[in-house]
Length: 381
Image 1 (cartoon, helix red, strand yellow):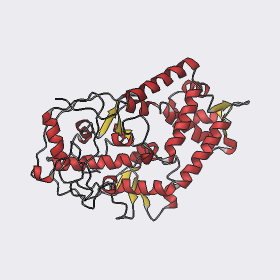
Image 2 (cartoon, one colour):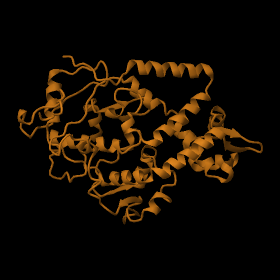
Image 3 (cartoon, rainbow, N blue to C red):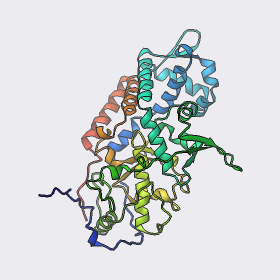
Image 4 (cartoon, one colour):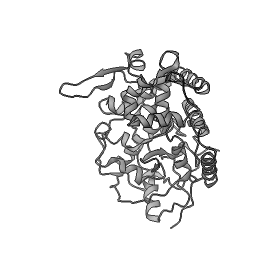
């Protein structure tokens, strides 16, 4: 008997519709997902702490004088003022130590973890290079402004000195260029690789036919869809799938087929990040580079079963739902080695907080897991 993949409620047989559809004005409500909010919240202050860790560990003897640290422009950009840096160093004594003479160093545990992180970066460098190449392959000019790459640096797992390290070690793949009349420096891809131009959705396809691939879909508990939305989503899932690496010039931007391509681009882009998420503003300036229509980030709101838009930490973070499987932790098959390292940093930071606050945070985390806010909900009219 032939094995066939079980079709979900969001999938429709190809004969159910014509392969042309005008974009439907479907509005879906935003529903808070406690589990995915918890996933984003766990990195509160982690980037700032990691910036200091990186600076201190790069100095001889893994220490830096306080005046030198405060004079760093990047530190001022992150913390804004001197008192903020001092308060941060004093708050997270599990990571930082103030030595006699005014030097700042790392604690033994933090230094050990930093060394493990460096080893992890070395071991996973081939993976990092391929993901960076794939990111550039998603763009029409096979290029990105360095400012945009810098915005995505943390999400991609790029080291702070990637310009002097990664880019210089792979001159056959990357080049820095400044077009005439453009003040920006661009990172340009020199070599296209057909083996890399296969999306994650295509890799997981149950057959060699990738003509009309559906996206994995799940909803926050309590999310209800009207029958109009259910029917539209079924038909939309059955539309032709356009590879995010393919030339999109033949698509009409006013159609659902085009929107499915747009969703596919961001589905792939999020898969290229280590935690399968990024802040919305990190991609907001990539419209022309990705051949997107106006207000293209609206796809995150129109497809809440594929993406979750978290609003914690004073920003909007786009999370790929399928990577978390309904919980607040990445599924093992999606987890990058850096994720575990960063989780250990975050655990060390929480250990530095006063006991009462630590207990409150632990209680919230346990409640998030119990709620399983990312589980697929039952559909109601």
